[in-house]
Length: 322
Image 1: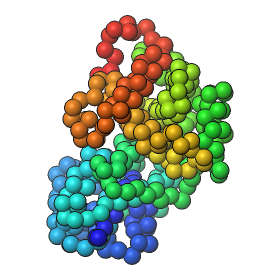
Image 2: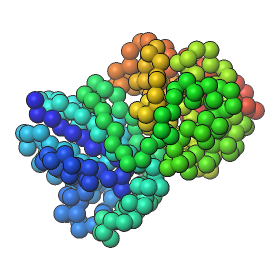
Image 3: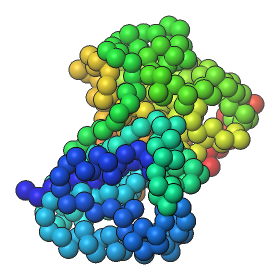
Image 4: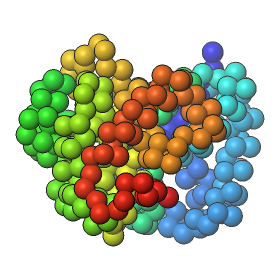
């Protein structure tokens, strides 16, 4: 059967370089942007993007054979639309996440030819909102490509969890996360700077860990807010659930000896939706993400832990998440 490989990654992560190794027809939004505008440095308006992707889709969906679809493709909503279109045309769809630490992606971006350099603010924004995949919703299979590891070699699942539980999340991150990714966790010990969380970020995670009564909720608690360190911006944490879901994806791709009763895709999905749960999972969210009833129950089970694991002067009956 013909195959569509959809590449996912921020500018500078190495998608186009990786695509060359696959020896398949390669359709790239960057190539079209350069063809139309001669540069990647400007022309990032909504109108310009629409022009680029209209042309890209005209070429891709009329091709009819196996191919590589190369764009940043960071959101699940966008990938879901691509998935449905490719499936309607008879393709198997693989997501190949080309992932590097943010600093490395920025470094590689700066080494590009002048007209191919993407502004840092765009890379930062994309990194914040890159979302983990869900098989059957935005792909048939997933592959992770990276020059950098997220964890140190031979990190054992039980050792990581035990250290987080006994000595706290900062100790586990410091010992087991690779040097390439450690800079992204420099804010982990800082205060939330918001009246909704008077405790530090790591203290909140540790409170969730202590309030977890089973192994599944424990690993969700450990991983769910790691993205706050990278997303922190003036007391706001937009995108931290997405970054956390990506850290969880990388964690499960590399950690050794995952217990059989821990289902990694359930953990990733609970983390992906943990902010939605504060507001209530809408029927649309449940249907769009194909959330089975048991998974909805688990998302709300973790939400109960997340809600009580904080220090605040805000009345508990006041709606705090908008």
